[in-house]
Amino acid sequence: DIQMTQSPSTLSASVGDRVTITCRASQSISSWLAWYQQKPGKAPKLLIYQASSLESGVPSRFSGSGSGTEFTLTISSLQPGDFATYYCQQYDNYWTFGQGTKVEIK
Amino acid sequence: EVQLVESGGGLVQPGGSLRLSCAASEFTLSSYWMSWVRQAPGKGLEWVANIKQDGSEKYYVDSVKGRFTISRDNAKNSLYLQMNSLRAEDTALYYCARGGIRWSGDYWGQGTLVTVSS
Image (tube, each protein chain N blue to C red):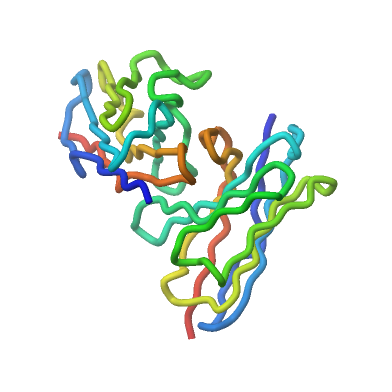
């Protein structure tokens, strides 16, 4: 089974900061990688699919990169509504989620 | 607007059964893989099961194999999860999501809570 490892598990940042979250797959998943944002009490929201494609309606400050086993999610300028938990997910072979990265206010 | 609405959750004793349903609207269910994902209280997301458009392929996380069954009725625009031999560790909010193998979860329901306790 494919394991997904996210880092860091918690990230403290301020509004306007550039934020980067990393996700590593235990084997190559090509570009079958998605990123989700989840706020308390809400369902996950798809941000990025195919490693770097921005889901419709998602602000352009969110971007994704990588292929194979190493991936990153970048928020270019953190906004108040971006404080949330972020998950990576591989969907090449079944589904597997990373353990999540909580972005909190510094 | 695409909608997914889960139902069927509740309190059940260990060893008991529940059947979750997910009603889909504003898209053609038969065109999409569908999935169930769960989230234990205060924990991360865990994939549970995927099912192909015609139901011919089904996949499960190891921890539910032999106990859970995913199914669908495209004519009724519905997805199901039959859960048997429930354990305390199955306690979670269960989400249905549109997507599956090589298709990310682009739409999610709001979830239905399953609590396994005596």
